[in-house]
Length: 282
Length: 229
Image 1 (cartoon, rainbow over the protein chains, first blue to last red):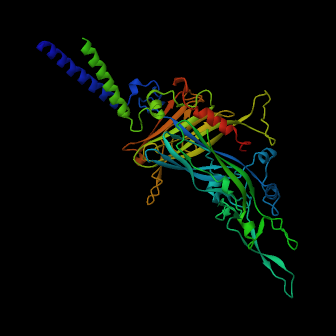
Image 2 (image 1 turned 120 degrees about the vertical axis):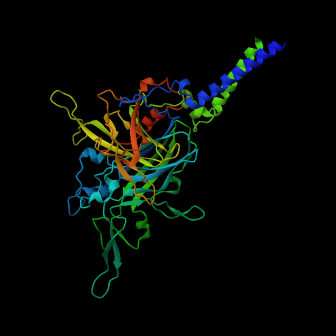
Image 3 (image 1 turned 135 degrees about the vertical axis):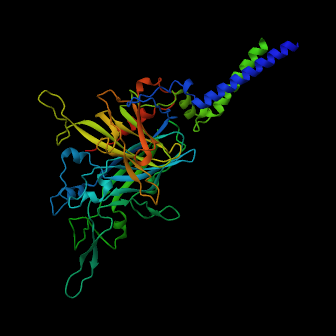
């Protein structure tokens, strides 16, 4: 009996040592030895370094399906100085998209955060009198997809969605008639929204949900965050709508250039056009 | 003898349990989470776009202690189109092509998970010929921008010192994953060095029990109306 106990006790010790050794080996090697997905990565420099596989990805993409108002496009394509002097081929005209950008914030389950900017749209869509290099995001290459590693807690648009306003918009003030001249509109200034990225504003509503002021995005069309997307899924932000600018037309005055009355709050609020954002997880 | 076997079984079970509890050394791993299973054994979600999704995934990994922006450029061959958008043909009937560079800037941060960001370049109607760091794919280009998010420090650009990967040389093919990793390295400009790797789609297991990330992404991208001129 004594001998048997000794034998089992010794065996138990050696097995325990072996088990601990195996556990240690597993934790040190990062399971590489057991993992068929841990294929050796080819190092083109001839080295032997490797990178562990990602746990999986969540793809985030921006689909720009917005278009440009026909009157604005006609103005942009008209020769200088009456238009924007933009020369588009029929193919470019068919596939034209306004330049849109927005920031995406990705929160990870471990508390990490990454923020990046999506930008997409036609770089030729700008009044040729404007120096495009003054707006770097207009000439930057586009970024329309980003791949992040799992696990993702939340994906959301951070800050406003912005669209590039490709023309200068003239602001006019109404001048009452007096003894010397009839009533007219006087050019006062170019709007500060001219020739730069402008934020798209959401409609203003009262506490009952009635629209007080219609702006660029309807209340039901705002982007919503995505919480806890499954590893391997695709989150897409699709922007639809039309980039548009006002053209001042009244019985006593009309302009062929983009223009607006400075005291017309409704027209001012809709500078930029009307858009909708759809968020999908596939 | 029977006791010996049951002890052996017990020890193995304990060892595997310990391995799983500690996520096999991976701090990101969670027990039986899809991500963990994919990390351990693969086959849940794809690591590469693969043959079903014509794209090249570029994965940038920041293994430094600071923020790093990767300036990733792909040289792409695309058809030359006329004003109507029709592809042009030469006298032999071949499609005339041109090579263009496409650059994206991927921001990474020194925290787990946020230290990685990737981008896919499509090779459905185009071909990805070369992929590297820097706007002109030269080894002397500023391929990295270090410390860009720190408010008081403007950051600085450093040379990647890396030759681009070339498809024609067999470095990669459509469907593969290319990895650029920045690591701290004394004696290098900015204290950072870059390594590149390729994960060939052919080396991957049959995919996938979970969502087909890149196949779905391809379908979503195809839903875009028109093309960028």
